[in-house]
Length: 347
Image (tube, rainbow, N blue to C red; front, side, top):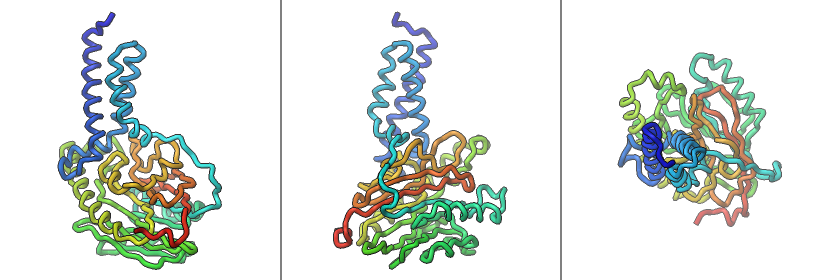
């Protein structure tokens, strides 16, 4: 009765490998990418590894085999990763409270270059006007498309010599201070703006960590040399770590509560996310639903764009938008400040 035959043994071998690799993936958020840069690629594949182990668990369960315990226990050990992958929560708090902040990597207001900016640019701005966030954080921004008519306050910082590529923060509230953290040997950067919202002041960081230049198509990835691809991604993760350290040092000096709205180019299962988040609230985890996918990839539900806020904020609402105009999907959160201005300043 307990024999499973050669096929069952082969399945269990594959199951064991998948379980061990998933356990390794659980450890990666605690290991700096500079230690094992190529291994850090697993953090992007963790959703797939979780699904594979769920399939193995189900396979043995329907056969009433104790071997289901292997994947079952591994999945139980990483229960917090399961909740990060799929969320069913939603918010029913009043929609008139607080302020709305959107993060959107607009890919220079094009998707892949096949559609001219003259078409996608107006479509994106029309969407933004309809969504009407109070604060707008755009990555890979091209200044040829302006939203100045809707936003009286803005701070943009271009990162290329032609001044056609960079980040911008638009705001309906006054920007009282601003600045940038430029990354060495990179077209990515961080900008920030101190924004006065009524009697309070908050700091918004628009983060665009190092890109790994991954095509949003599995077929295109298959055409690339796997070793070179993994090596390039490993190099990007190492750069992200140094960029993260610059951010963390700068954030510590902030006199105001912080909101991050940006493109991490890394997942919620990564070291980069864990360190940047710290004690902050992930708006998707608090009020989102589904997988929260933000990057247009064929089969992986990649969530690499985030809105994170200090615990002094309440997360009232969160939305993912299924808008296929860029290689990223826009996200928007509604936040409210819990305290008055004299309680907001960081110690």
